[in-house]
Structures are given as structure tokens and as C-alpha cells.
Length: 123
Image (cartoon, rainbow, N blue to C red; front, side, top):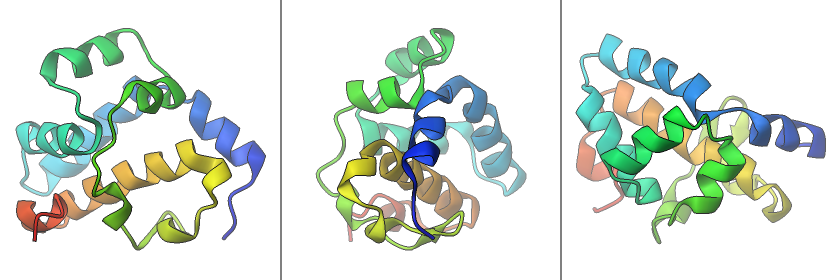
């Protein structure tokens, strides 16, 4: 599938706080922890616990969430299909959309029981 400008704008306006509880539920249902989820988010974005909680409380949009983030240099190694979109095929003009899909992919891998060192692209 191809990302459209409309879809990119829609995702960019969504708040991280509205999606975060779903991430927590997804990983906990599969036996992973909230702490592991935070480790994955911190790896991708550089946010520590305090920063993450502030963004949730401020109801930051995904656009703001990723504008303020320091994306990990290995984020480009996140590949595959998530929500019907092949991450590596998302155009540069839809950067926010790609970054949200990076996060979705990491959460999905965590929920599926993948080893943390594989999720964090250290091996």
C-alpha cells in the first residue's frame, strides 16, 4: 500500500497518549512488561521515563512526539510490513508516518516474544 498525504496528516495529528495504552495492553497480554515497552521506546526515541510521561500528560501528537525525539541511528534497520505498509518503502516525504510505523513494528516484535537484542537491532 502507498501512504497518502491525508493518511500521513491523520497519523501525525493523533496523540501518543491515545495509542500508548494499547501498546501496554498488547505487550502485557503476551507476557511482556511495561518496562520492556519503555526500553523499546527509549531505544527508538531517546525518551527517558520522565520525558515519556510528560509527553503522555501533554497529549503530544505523534508529529510533536517524533519532532522532539532523537531517533536511534539504527532505526533505519527496522524493516518489514506493519498495518499493510512495508516500512522501507514509505517515502521520505511521509517521515512521521514511517516513524510511527517503526514504533508499531518494535511493539509488535516485543509482543511476539522476539529477543530484546534483536528488537533493539544490536545483533
